[in-house]
Image (cartoon, rainbow, N blue to C red; front, side):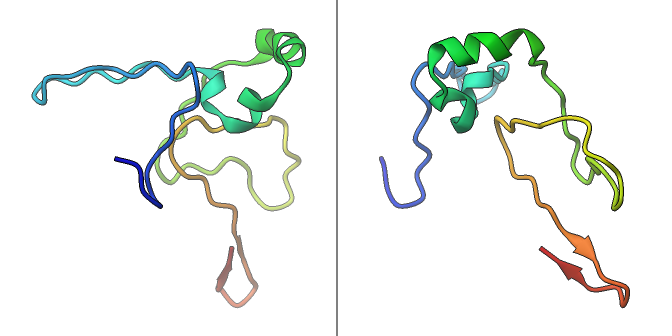
Length: 93
């Protein structure tokens, strides 16, 4: 059933099948990221050797304020939030 908040899978995305008691998730693939999936095949093939999976645990900080970003993260599942903490302790997203 597709609705306003339904997930529409990227073409070619592998999904695991479970019986309700035993579920084994499919390993992430770069094309699960909409930005990477939208690239022309030739450009994706050029980048593919440099892509590697990287788990992002809940609450993990990708980089701190003032740090230079060393990597790009192409998220394949979940949500990542970018926010800053002001001098008075409030967060801005």
